[in-house]
Every structure is written in structure tokens, then in C-alpha cells.
Length: 506
Ligand code: HEM
Image 1 (tube, rainbow, N blue to C red):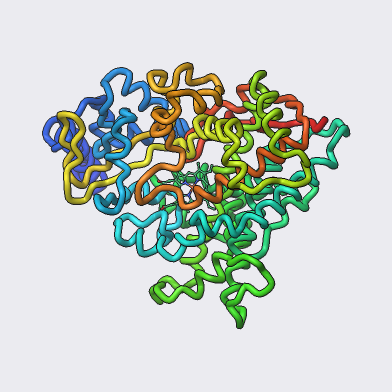
Image 2 (spheres, rainbow, N blue to C red):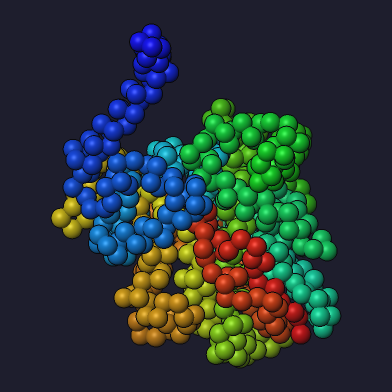
């Protein structure tokens, strides 16, 4: 008996397990009572172990954002939400966290893994590395470059309208999620590869592309918590990945399609984008002299392509779809918008420039209110001050600590946006509009802010103007709960099974 007891107690597995558990308990106690963040308010369990956050985001699926909101209601504007992360819910502090390059911020290495593309600029942890990698892409997205791109975007809008007009009075519903995604996908792939994916030409608007980009988003927590598993799944034979994890299979198929485009450009003798009246990102990118030799490979370009194409497609599509829903479902908005568009666009076949559309107050207010409802991203965005502490009121947050804020908490804050769940473009037209604007942060701010802001704004204004000048829509089997955000998979997502906005063209 004694021999059995000794064998069990001294078995290496038991010894290691006991030692590991003891280590975790001591670590938890240290984090809660002794480490530099121990004074910050928040649940003790969240401070002791990251399993707390893991439970809400991985097990329950994208739910920590709502738990964080509850924590702020209980503990106030600054909360320790995990052993190493501080979250702030004070909209006036946004500019102190999301700073420019004179006060650089790093990303937090842990959440830099969200997208599963470690060499892409979006995943670069250090400020300097991020700047070096993003640099070659910046000029493609300047206001000037986007203005030059306008004829292409307008042509895609025309194509979208052409397709929608075929549904007129047929009684056949259209998925606005798929139609808008086809438009944004064709724009961003035309700009990236000089070859659109042709989603607007497909009968059903090629839903497999937005499905693939949504799959990238749904896999963000797998990438963060189990990067090795995500890597393994990405590299298995496709048939096996399809069986084990259909979401990852969609991502791999998406990667294969982009790899084909990039290889064609890499292998073509001339790197010239002959025949196109606008530059294209990956032709130019491959010519960039400043790019280190280690980054001149398919894998690196693929990471950048996923970043640009994915980010360009998912956010703008979501904005367009959700804004269309609120325009159609908020009784006073549609007639006001239509009246403005009819006056500004006497001939519906001739769309004004983006510059002219920007001057239409109600259209711009509708687009801004759409941003306030869609947030850009649902996830908090952690930033790290590498050398200096971040000081919030009496709290001194040590350098190296990830500090995050969440757009949704600001955009739905009733002390800033009165009646926050009412879609009210008028709030952007009143006397308070200028002071409200600084709290509208869908594109984030600082060095890591959205690269595609001007492109997104051009797509949104041109598409909304054309859709509501040319068509009368009626929502089809869509209710508010098909649109409400219930998941944070980095980007906002509705309930499972929602088909998004479906419409009939009258
Ligand atoms: C409504 C439309 C859009 C919204 C609200 C939006 C919002 C955002 C936000 C909040 C970020 C910061 C993410 C982070 O900190 O990790 C971001 C980053 C980014 N966005 Fe957008 N985006 C939109 C459209 C676009 C478009 C059209 C493109 C390009 C085609 C684009 C490309 C990017 C890229 C490349 C980044 C990474 C920037 C970096 O890491 O420095 N976005 N976007």
C-alpha cells in the first residue's frame, strides 16, 4: 500500500502537476496583492488569471466587451480587466492613449496576434517596425490618391446599381450584406491587384468572400490563445482543415486566391500595371526600394494583402449595410435624405464627385451616425507606452502596461450622445455637432489609426448617394435583432443565423 502511495506521490506527472498548480496559485496571489497594478480597481479573479477573459471571449465567444462595460458600471472609469491590462472608459482620455509619433505607442504583443499574420504591418508590435512596414502603403490611401481613384469607385457603384435594378419589382429579396460586400470587395481587389474578384458579376454577389473575411474575424481568439493550433490548421491539407475547422478552411481558400494574384504580379516580367488608369497597390509594393529583402516574399505580401483586403472589405460593408437598415427603419430619415439627394443630383445617372457629396449636410450626417452605430471595431484596442507612464487622473500606469479603450462604450455613452440607441443624424447638424465630433472615433486615432479612412468615406458617400437617389427599398424579413451587435469578434457581429439586411427593390 505504502509502495503504491509512494509511486503515485513521486510520479513525475503528479509532481509536475502539483508544482504547476502551486506556481499558479502563488502567481495569482502575487498579481492580486503585490504586483505594480495591484491597486487598480477591478474583479480580483480577472486580476489573478487571464482565464477570466478567456472564458468570456473564447468559451462564450466574443463577450468580454459587455463584461467590461459591467465592470466600469461597478468600479468606475479605470479598471484592471486582466493580470496585465488596464481599460479606461473615459472618452475625454482617448487622445492620450491613441497618440501620434511624437509620443509613440506600441501594440500589445498578445493582441497583435489577433489576425494570424505575424509579419504584416498590422501585427507589428514596436512603433518603429510598424512605421517602417506601413510606410510604403501610406501614399495609396492619402486623400489625393483616393480622389484619383474616384472614377474606379464610381464605376463599381454604377455596377452595383445596375445589378440592383435587375431586381426591381421582381419580388426577389436581395441580401444587402452580400451586395455591399461585393462592391467593397471588387473595389479593394481592383485597387490591390489590378484585378477585381468579380463579385458584382456573380448572380448571388459571391457570399463566399464576406464569409471568408468573417471567418478571419471569428478565428481571432483562436489566433490569440492558441496560435500554434491556428498555424497547424492553416498548414494541414485543405481537405483535412475543411473537416476539422471549416472556418479556417475558408481563410485558407481566401489566402490561396490572394497568393495566386500576388504570384502573378511577382512573376510577371514587367511590374508595370499596364492598362490601368490608377496605380495598384501590389504592383507598386513589389517595386518599393525600401523594403528589406526578408520581406520580399509571398508570405509577407500575403499578410499585407489579408490586412488591406480584409480590413477594406469587412468594415465598410458593415457600415453600409447597417446604415441602410437605419435609413429604412427610422421613419423621418428616408424622406429627408431623399429630398436632399433629389435636389443635389437632378439627373440620377450622373453622380457628383465625393467632394460635392461631402458638402451635403444630411448625407454626411447619416454617414456619421452610421459610424456611431457601427464603431469600426467592437474590440478594445490596447496600446503600450514603452518608456513613459500613462497618467490618468491620480492613477499612474507603469510603462509597458497595455492600456485600452472601446469605441462602443463611447459611442453608446448617454452623457455624450443623448438617447444613444436612437438613429438621429440631426445630432451631427446641431450646435453641439463640433464638440460631439471628437467623440466619434470609428477609425481610431494616432499612429495605428485606419489606413483606409479616405477610401472608406468615398465608398460610403458614393454608394449611399447612388442607392437612395436611384432606388426605393423595402426591408424584407429583417428585424432590429438581425442587426444588433451581440458578438465582438474584433469587428461587431449580429446574432448567429442573422441574414443581415434583406431588401426588395420597389
Ligand atoms: C467604415 C470603414 C472603416 C472603418 C470604420 C475602419 C476602422 C479601422 C480601425 C478602428 C482600425 C484600427 C485597428 C487597430 O487598431 O488594430 C483600422 C485599421 C486599419 N484599416 Fe480600417 N476601417 C475602415 C475601412 C478601411 C478600408 C476601406 C481600408 C483599406 C482598403 C482599411 C484598412 C485598414 C488597415 C490596413 C488598418 C491597419 C492600420 C495599422 O495597423 O496601422 N480600413 N481601421
